[in-house]
Amino acid sequence: MHPIHLLTLLAAFALPAHAQHAHGEGKLDVVIDKDSIAISLELPLDAAVGFERAPRNEREKAALAATEKTLADAALFVPTPAANCKAQTPKIVMPAFGAKVGADDHGDVDASYSYRCANPAALKGIETSIFKSFKRLYRLEAQRVGPAGQGKQRLTPKNPLLNW
Image 1 (cartoon, rainbow, N blue to C red):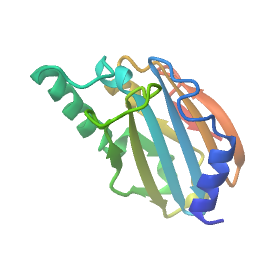
Image 2 (tube, rainbow, N blue to C red; image 1 turned 90 degrees about the horizontal axis):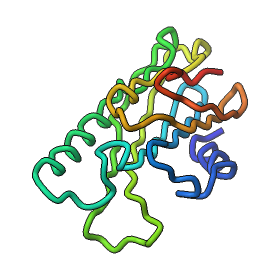
Image 3 (spheres, rainbow, N blue to C red; image 1 turned 180 degrees about the vertical axis):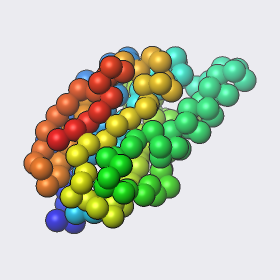
Image 4 (tube, rainbow, N blue to C red; image 1 turned 90 degrees about the vertical axis):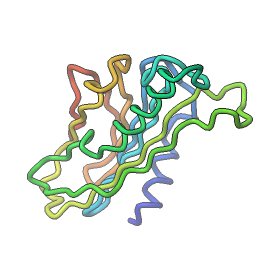
């Protein structure tokens, strides 16, 4: 199945955007298709930097820049080493402060990661180190779709491994 079709399928069982926005809780969607992995992360700005508004000073601007730099490191997510997966360049979308936003916009950071795996049969899970970088983040609600079926799992600082 084409990755776009899998993303559509994932969106069909995903929650509506911001339906469960909670401080300290992010969303992770993972699609596995043949030799590729697509990861979509939605991180509340509050969990990343401690505020959900335009930065008010240089320290807050620096915190936003540091968040973007941290999320731009594909090593935040590590597929099973035996699968021999290589990361593509992540795509990070920071909130557009100053633009007109709806009343329900909570200032999320969106990040996309993709990997190609030389040995996809060995892929059994993906571990994340994101909790070490963002101390205010206490859980990621993860959903996955792939050859092993679909499922949901809650990732926490004590359980940072999405496995199947």
